[in-house]
Image (cartoon, rainbow, N blue to C red; front, side):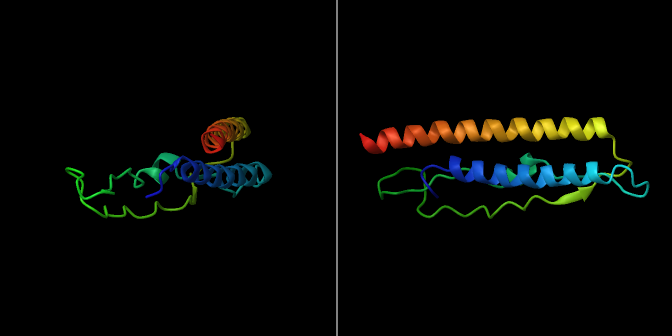
Length: 123
């Protein structure tokens, strides 16, 4: 377990957002194809539900925590799936806006924590 898992979580979300943006772009590009079925990715919450924070004993006198907690395993990767039905451009543009807002929030949080980490390390 790493002391600060926020950067790993932010990296996973950024990867998920890029896959979702690719799905949205593919849907928009193929909107005029009558046989094309809209695609989306599994929700990010499903990606991280297995990534639970676990306590680990770092000293023999810690109470109630055993040394070497089990690794919950890596969450499954973002998978594109067919959601069925034709592409609705308004829905795809709304999804694109959600991806943009998610990426901006992700970047802002990582920047803030990066600044805090630098301030602590500089003393």
